[in-house]
Amino acid sequence: MPVERQYLAVYQEYCRRGEEIASRSKCAIVSIARNAMPHLEKTLALVEQTAMMFQAATYYVYENDSTDSTPMVLDEFAASRPWMTVEHETLGEPDTRGFEEDRTVRLARCRSRCQSWVERHANDATFVLVLDVDPHGGFSPTGILNSVGWMASHGDAAGMASYSLFVRRDEMGQTSIAHYDAWAARLNFWEDRRDCPGGMLWAHMMMPPVGSPPIPLYSAFGGACLYRASAFRRGVYDGIGVNGVPDCEHVSFHRSMRRHGWAMYLNPSSRYVAILPGGGEE
Image 1: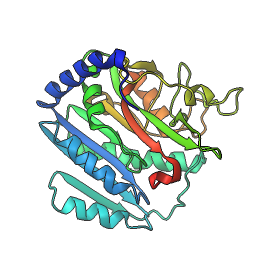
Image 2: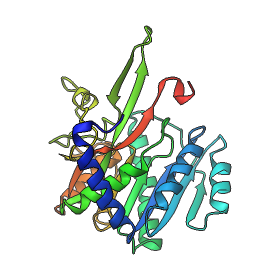
Image 3: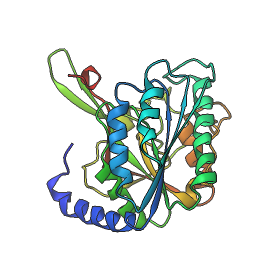
Image 4: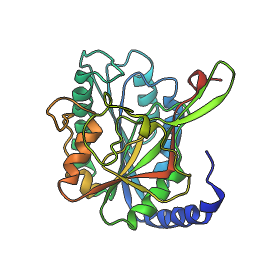
């Protein structure tokens, strides 16, 4: 989705500010990976482009239990890039992709591995980019710069989440677009409201103009979230919701940061194309 004309000047100004800040800042990029092919290679190219925008950058990937070529692709890419570290582990747990309770707790453990790595190996970072590695249509490195620029003007911002997109085509060939990462999005509440009237429809229908200012939410992720490193270190990944049962790991992480006075924002200019028709192969 292109930047809307009425917001183009604002978009460009915050990209310019972000570029200037990034040129004198360090960014730690972290990902978890499991069976991320065939989209991983495209993501890695965008990661490298993003890393080069900062004065210095590191990239850590925690891979586990892949049965496709994900481990090989990661190792081959890292072999010629000293700023990248890959760790592999076999946990023996099922590759669930839905709302399963055991999945949220497992993902929280994996995210915690990334957080611990940042603490040990990149504790001088100014920013931390938490990135999912399997978007069908990639993500916008320039959008990350835009988030850097906006974060500088929002002193309470723990993070700037991305605007994740779900593009689908119906039987008549008509294309529609929705906001994808609805489960991690919480407007002004913490509860998992999937079973309430309307469910997550409000989040799927949240389509702010690209280029418009960031929107405050209790929680948002969107596949690529830029965090202020000082806030990222204060967060706790446990995957447990306010009612004591498992919930999206990003929500509990953001709730823990909010207790320390931090806030989350969704940045419409940071685009992440999660799902495309035909898996992005059309």
